[in-house]
Amino acid sequence: MGRAGRGRVWHSAQPPLTATDDNLATMVQMYKEPKTQSVQAAVELRGVSCYFGPVKAVDGVDLEILPGEFFSMLGPSGSGKTTCLRLIGGFEQPTAGQIVLFGQDASKLPPYARDVNTVFQDYALFPHMNVRDNVAYALMVRGVPKPERHRRAEEMLELVKLSGLGDRRPGQLSGGQRQRVALARALINRPKLLLLDEPLGALDLKLREEMQIELKALQRQLGITFIYVTHDQGEALSMSDRVAVFNHGKIEQLDNPKTLYEYPKTEFVARFVGSANVLEGRLLGLGTGKYALRPERIAIQAGSHNGPNSLCGTLLDIHYLGAQTRYEVQVGNERLTVLTPSEEQGLQVGGAVTLRWEHSALRPLQEAS
Ligand code: ATP
Image (cartoon, rainbow, N blue to C red; front, side, top):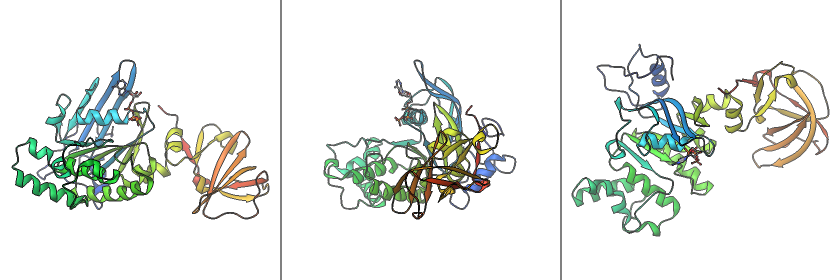
């Protein structure tokens, strides 16, 4: 929770701003400094918990998401991110706390009464309906006449690059195309908030990367708030304005991707986002506490050469990765990873190596609360 406290709705004569690439940083700042101007959060979770019997799936989460933000919930399996998304969608009820959507308490509202749509991981398309009718489904339920809903469905299909496929059944599409249909169906009634639960999980790597770019572009174009659940840190970093890292039902860190990667606060975040080396301060001659050191911030050379900001060890393995080379090095009881842009010459598995880094590359870590 920001230092301005809970339940902020900052009144202003102007309508709430929507985030764009240009003004998002300003909006986040404005949000932190409520006296300067008003921004109403799209979503606020205030002390929200959700327990399933003894399992604390979500445990006292405070969260604010801005209108127009691409916000990701990242964490390992079982960390509570899907439950958090389902709470926002109204598919689960909080055990404690309050959920506020666009300034209104939505804690007790059913899913259909929220201005929210969801794209589920399995897409949940109707197999007996063609693509056009799948996309137009929400309009049909609302009684929109057929010509109008078909026209709008075709517009949506064009938006997700599926023009001309309206007559097919979902079973006659590829996984990536089905994913686009699910997206078009969720967007057709222009919800203020779109929830996406690992929507790219079933796609192969190349298609997933293409869809990441398209999803981000689509979100910017429409200006809709996206809340995206994933366990893939690369996906979260590449698409999001901000990322909440979940662990054991709590948010361990919430920051923009760059800050999250460059300044992980805890050992869990350092290891989960970009797999950092975590070193004891004692090993570094820095007293107690732990430090994160990214593999690409370490240089490696053959032989043992003592000096400041360095450690000597034994080279265990070399992995050629194409664009980079990864080295595994044993230093005392620790196994460290080093990444270099090209393969260093003269290194031999089993041989002595020296690792060096700039002092500024070390990130002190806090104990998780
Ligand atoms: P995944 O990536 O595997 O979906 P997640 O981070 O989204 O994981 P959740 O699905 O939110 O995690 O689950 C958090 C915890 O709550 C897990 O321990 C899970 O087993 C438990 N849980 C979730 N839904 C239920 C339910 N309906 N009944 C009982 N336990 C549940």
